[in-house]
Length: 315
Length: 193
Image (cartoon, rainbow over all chains, first blue to last red; front, side, top):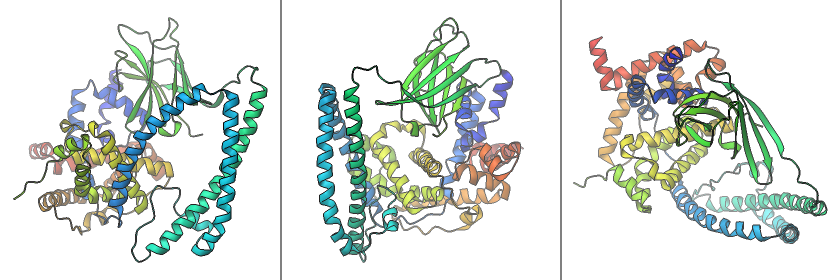
């Protein structure tokens, strides 16, 4: 164990510069909790790395960026607050709605969208003709990004037409796809209604990764399985042959990406050293899963030794 | 002469949802964080996206910054790098290889009016550039690949066909050189060597 700790002491430079991968980062940060020498070294090295951004060549920000960013930031925070309220209400409504009612709503919505889609399709050619800029290339340019078109005063009129045309073209394409998807949903729901009395179908297993021991004296084995159901994406972490716990110790599961470590659950292994955790998450937000042995179950960030870890492969 | 408002005061006002404070902070650091983001993603639209995400986080999670953590710019640069590197990884767009010495030699073309802060920033910038200029080519490259391109040590070794141990030693020597020139502790160590 001391050898491993000494090895960790050599990682300070790479850690501060950002060159450790997620698993090593977790291990080093756990080591950092107990190594005063590394704490001092990291603090000194941080002073250096924190200065590196000042060495870059200064670049003039694009015209109108200030307005775009500030209005987006201030509007988004307002919208997201409103969304929280709305989603709460939505949630209550959905819970009170039967499957049959849900199917009818989907059907009605699909009909409405079909109607809107037809209306937009009737309008779109006129706009395309006037804008004259709708092409495959023009549609790709915004890349689905949030960034609005640049406000160049000389070209603002043309850009406005481009934006409107591209936006409408994208909207039409989106509505067509959405409508098609809704129709499939309606068909699916219809089938579901006919089989309501049948047992629920199993979860779809999207991916399973073997968790590997992260220290020489660890014999534990683990499996992280990502499953998808109608409520979202979930992580099921199972482990066996885990070290015996003492005192208030507990095992904690972490989802990691860069320096972000999300606590995905705490568990105590049974007498055979076996334990498991179930956690709902967004797979795009993390790239590594790890299990640590913690001094207690209260930690918001990893403090103990990393036992098992593995990268979550992109599906 | 009017004293500039401290960053910590601005952050307190932002935590209190003061929009004018957010604008003040934006105006103070727009150029420097945009430049840093641009240096990493090497694309104007992507750099703007990074800056937007940075200010979204500042506005919505300003409480995560504590004065005890150090300078606000340090915190902002760490977040900016995380966002930018994450974007690079997601989009698998690697910044074009720009020799770091070009960056070191280029002059600022700044036009901001916050004179006192700007003078201080330029002085720090010159000092860092001089320190980077002392590194040899190999050391500059590992700093570039890891810090500005977001590669891990293993990725640097694999991608550039360099033994992992060599990557580590180059980083260690580079950091030692920079520490010697940029921190008081490093200067003291240098004197006693």
